[in-house]
Length: 224
Length: 217
Image (tube, rainbow over all chains, first blue to last red; front, side, top):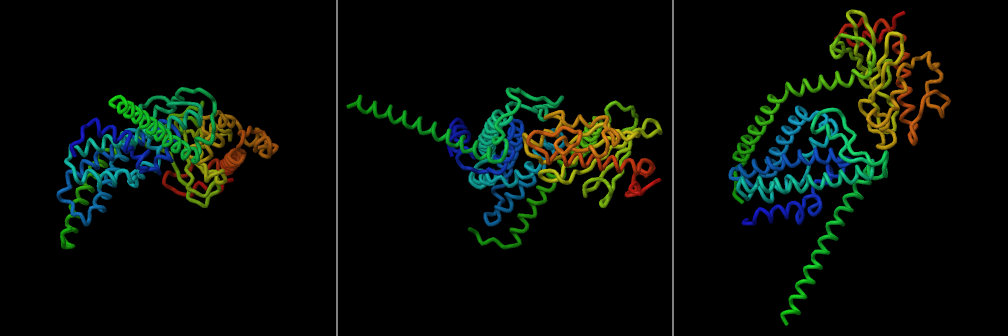
């Protein structure tokens, strides 16, 4: 693939966003995004796993026999997730406690195995790492956006408990209201927020396409 | 697709498995010590608030005894008791117990009890109560758990250990009554247990499981 790096970023963050367009990895996406800091934490963990798993799969792609590639991907991803979990426990213990089971569950995030299969197994190490970086950032940004949205409207605060990532005393973040619309914090709120995000993306795409068509049409009439 | 002999795939898989295992082993060796310290620190940090105002000079985590179920403390999970000393004098006991009848599963709570049977502090360690309603039992969300400080089975009377709408003395949480009920019941049961086992709790040796549950009178 000879796509420019900007194109690839556009694709990972927008056109092929793993959460918004490919709808992969919805389980963690829906479950942990009740606050911004949780979304950010899981986003970072997923990004790290995605980059390293892409790197390893790509580096080993000449030795991986196609018949047994899936167990090998699972093996690589599972070990990497275990490593990340240990690192979280050692350096970000509070965040680890807050994310709980969802760090080990990164193993089941299909976005990761999909990138291994579709991209890393066919491309050199460098481009595979960049692919992991853009796809992971796309996923992480979506987690953060939904987390921020649900925290803001569900609890009336933003950036609460950022100390879980950066250490120090527990912080309450920016408190705008004492309470919010409870539904958004509960599981159904996760579905609503994701639906809203997808709808917003589609609306923006449609709007852009419409204006692009309008410009093209105007150019045509001018040429005539 | 090549016609790969089975043994070759096996070797292929084994090599990669060995590599992955060593990766995990290396990370573990590199982080194990830190994780251990973190857990100790977190435990000490979460136990201390339940001792508000008491003088003690022993590291709290070094005096742990565990009670396997069935025991007379609330919950049917393992209960943990930390004994707190000032010199050789016992000053308080910290109970880590489960309130069984929470709204969504058991609520793990920490109850500190001074020698005279008054509560020195209550903290919720683990729960799955509804966000926005039952989760105000957490100190980061509201001050609800602080109302137990300094209370005992004589103050208020044992019969008044319930929420106000049940005719008791304790505040409830708006929109959640099951959660407070479960916690109050568990604290009351812990205090009753402490009254009955005041001496044996402190004489049980660290690894002597179950010995503290025997009655002493």
